[in-house]
Each structure stands twice: as structure tokens, then as C-alpha cells.
Figure: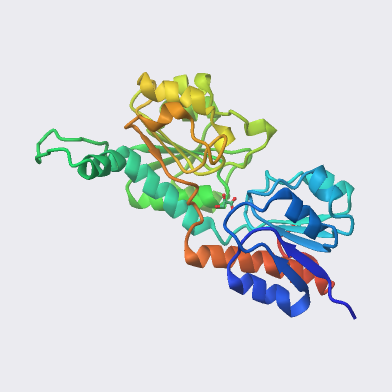
Length: 319
Ligand code: DGY
């Protein structure tokens, strides 16, 4: 019997490919560059299954190029790169990789909270520039976290994991979410649920941990930023377009808020020009899930989803 054909459109860790090879003929793009559309489409023409990265746009053109496609397994928890209704209409199952990147992303969000409040990027740049410096009582003072409020927008698994970390730093937790967290979680975290305006106006640090959708496009725009306190910080490890990046650059420049730390960008990999020169902006290149363990777990979960469907089982983590 001929094996089903799996096309992997980006470079993923070998353990994921090994699982796929047990049950399928696998073609995988092996470069870290984004796959050219012509190459992708040539491979999709005979694909039964596709394993995709967040840099792939799985839109109608993608689906048209893959007439036999049964499933798209995205190697990411976020799936805003996928036109899910178009996949559904074409009978294409979509899966993502929830759970396995929760800790890595929460760790990075906490690291960014510390970086931006303690001015670590600025300090690093000072040393690397070879600028003269001397320990001083008032040198590069930051903001302590103890007793400060962390306002989390989007209290899913990553939001809760961040809250657990922030509690260890003595922070108070507030959150904004469509539904309330389980009572035992709220109790453990001492978390209060607020509407967005109240969360923005009362938090010392606002962390974005919600999915990106039409509803969250530019959720943090000039108006939202103006609701934040001038000594407050914004952290985004979710998706870039949740923030109006041009408005953020202006707000940081004009002291509307004290600082921001971004792991994701509105027009990724491009970064708003106005942010680049600002010392109160911490900018890192979408590293939320970037640990060897986590990327391996993401690849193997995506592969296990494909293997499950090939074996006639339900997908493990369907969207
Ligand atoms: C995801 O999985 O959505 C992350 O952004 C990848 O780091």
C-alpha cells in the first residue's frame, strides 16, 4: 500500500520528522529561510498532510495548491497564520501545539518583565558601547516588582503560568479574560478579574497573552496606551498586531508609558523604525518558545497529530 505523503514546509527538529517517517513518505524543507512559494506549491500538489510553521500563510492559495490535503498540523500554539474557516470548508483538519510551550513562553514573558523594569537592555548596551561608567547611587534606577500589579490580558495557560512566576516575585495579579479562571486558580494566585480599561489604568505591568484575531487587532492602540499610567510597562509575547506599534513608539518616546518589552512585532520580522532608538524599548526576536526542549516537543506534538489521523484516530490537539 502506498504511504500517505506529508509535506513539512519548514525546518523542524528531527524527532518530529522521525515520527512522521514511520508512517508516511515525508518531504521536508531543510533551510531556515522561509520556503519559496513555487517550491511549496510544487510539493503541496501531491500532499495528503502538511506540517506548517507560523511563517506559512495557510490561505485559500495554499489550499488550492494542495487538492488532496486532509490536514494541516501547525507547529505553534497560535494559528492566526491559518485561515481556519477556509480549511474547514475544504474538509482540512487543523491542529496546533498547545501546552508544550506554556512554560517556555511564560519564562520569557517573566524575563521581559524583569528586563524592562530593571533596564537590562539599556545596561547591556551601555557596557557594549564601551561608554565610561561608575557605580552610583542613582545610576540606572529601575522599578521593583514587589507589591506591584501585573495585569494579564488573556488568562489562558500561558497567562496563568506567567502569573505563577510573577507571584514568586511578589507581584499582585489582575487579569482580563472572556471567562473567569477556575476558582482554585484565582485563589492560588489571589487574582482579580477586571475589565480592560480598569486593568490598563491600574496595572504597573501589562502583559499581553491573548490570541490574535480580528477582535484583538490593535487592542493596544493610542487610546489604550493613554489609559496606562506613565510609570507602567507593557510586555507582548503574544502576537505583534495586537499592538499598534507606531502608536507604541510615540507613547514610549513621549513618556505616556515608562517602557515596553516586545517578543513579537506587527510586521514581523520588520520592527517599527521609531522603536529602534528608544532605550525604554526591549526588543527580542520572537523567542517565546525558543528552547531546544520546547521546539522538540512542538515538532513531536505536531507529528503525533498527523500520525494519529493517518492511523484513523482523532487528532490530539485540533483547533
Ligand atoms: C506559538 O507557538 O504560537 C509561538 O508564537 C511560537 O513561538
